[in-house]
Length: 303
Image (cartoon, rainbow, N blue to C red; front, top):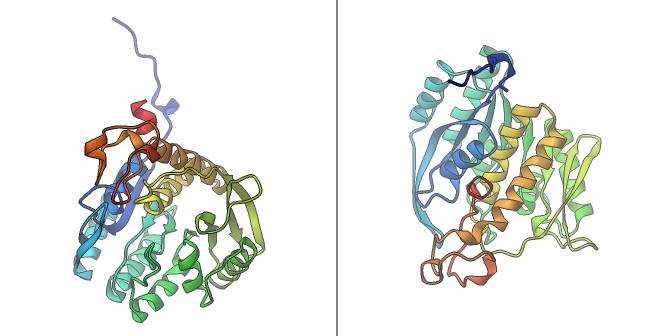
């Protein structure tokens, strides 16, 4: 018999990461993507639902909000039993739900030591450019920024949060992100996916604080139609990686590297319009699809 000499003290702590978001029954975004992302990045995933949606890789056809008091009941049930190392916040579709979540965050910060790290992905603007929230909910999201440690808006969402036009250059987006960081005492991950690539053909993300850029990251541009849920997945990975490392720069680096590989591996999935006919493809662009497919969260695990 082989003797197991492993000591519990030698085993790294697995962080407990809570996602607060809506559901995507097709599995590519929302709570489902968050659970996969947290797990793939080495965390124990928990989830509190804020909304049910009817959606797939083609789009969203319906949504049903969870009652704010039941959102709070889910959150309290977790906090009463489990130490929460990090919280990722995604879809919050009404002002009342946002208010309930904010009250929970304030309570858990007071009642748990150390307080959980909070990453907010402010889901406010669709890929089409359509605003997803009414004015009351947008105002509530802006108030929620004060509870977050890091926010991950895309370029259109950055414009809404900073009450300005959509940035067309990295310099303009950096100015918006810095002002937002100063106003709300929060770090901003400026995501350059909506901006032109740099001279090397790469995209640029920046970690921005009140004093300006903390670190810049060159991100390879991967041509792929499979981008459904990338924002959800990145923010969940960030929350998990920070809970593991305690340092934002390596957390961003690790989360981006994982996401890039998950996009690169996405062609191996046969999920969504067009893939069933053609089957798996090593090159995601080789399959002509009618929607936006999911990333391959566990591509690195599956080999």
